[in-house]
Image (cartoon, rainbow, N blue to C red):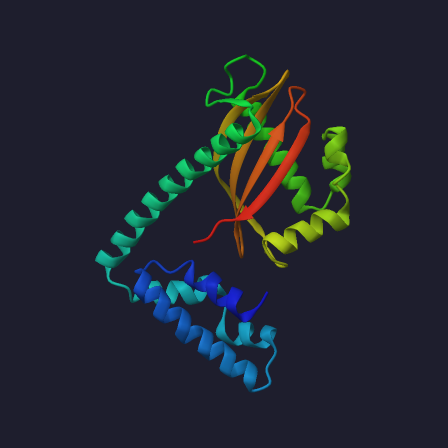
Length: 221
């Protein structure tokens, strides 16, 4: 984690306006950078300044209620837009590669939402525990080729960052059925919360519930 990531983790928990967040970010970042210039390590700076949630909680206590309510409404709208954008992105990919998608994942009786949800949570739990052999055991042959410790770790660091922190919660699921040539797949979009990041997983399963493809991306606050 860098000082910028640390400050962003604080700001992400502040229930204030965009302008307020921008000012707070600049103030807190300057404070952290000044401490680093004084010779302190990032760990020492974080210990001295405090946990992100504790700092954000104190800041939120001083924010007017009307501003908090406006922030929450804006956040709900953004989440709705994000969900729509995800579904749209899936359909764009469908157009490019000529598969056919259906929002009714249970349409042909090959997949059940509950089964897909449980399998997706199982895969993510194994990934968090770095139990890649268990993921490999429920993956297709093509997917097994990329399920190496070094490749998974590299992908996570490159796309998200080094320190995700503790897993907190699954916050949302989207399901789509994909038909490509003679194959049918169940596609699951999962939003997850970690201590330092919110991450979206996109998981594709074949009709035997084997993991066929996977991607992850940071959800910007």
